[in-house]
Length: 165
Image (cartoon, rainbow, N blue to C red; front, side, top):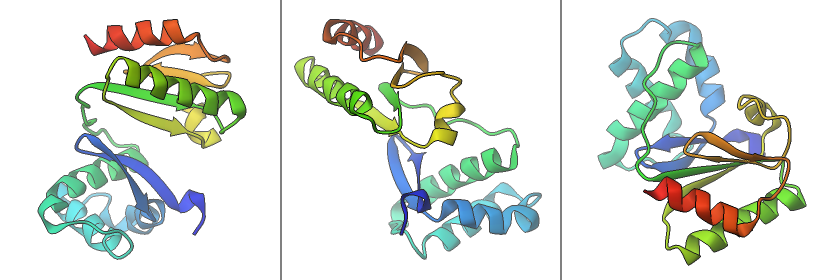
């Protein structure tokens, strides 16, 4: 299995890696594009359960998240899942600077006792969607804070403390 086979999506407040979601969406795009949301969500769960463990009690949450991703894929309007707490994204292919930024973020989070979602986006196509022209880039709660360098630890601490309040 290659890295491209796994796509990270948000289910509730948690980022979850899903195997094969892109292939399933391609397969379903024509036949299910105009079907009712509940039918599409159920079919996505059914198909994706073949390669992913989805506990019975959270299947409705997964169906909602899969449906959101399917609508995004089709270019239809969708309701974005609102995250509670601080959401951090590092955009960069995994170079020394990108990995250094991730480590610095984790150190600062430990120092200020911050619980947050950190996502390191390494896929160049996905990074392009954010419109940043350098790496590493740091986004906190959807706002670009830094591009092309690793900010000083004090500045990161200031941004995270501000985002926490």
